[in-house]
Length: 87
Image 1 (cartoon, rainbow, N blue to C red):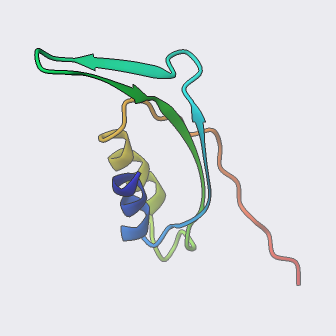
Image 2 (cartoon, rainbow, N blue to C red):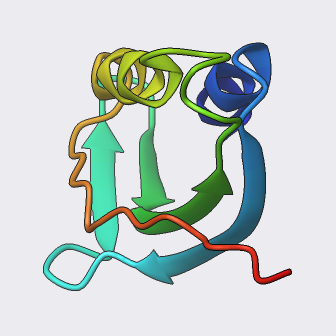
């Protein structure tokens, strides 16, 4: 989780929400070797973030997503949207 969040922090992308859920299909993973057996919980994380204005940081979200894809086993971008400020 730290490595994933540091990718966003390095690009000044503000994380506004993090949720985690047990992996639906495989919530537990057993890892065994000749000395011991360990059980690990598999989680899925959902992250909402805000990014600076695109002109100031062109492509920073896409670069972060690409780098995040290199350290996780599964990544899906669910969507993106722009906020409109009303004056």
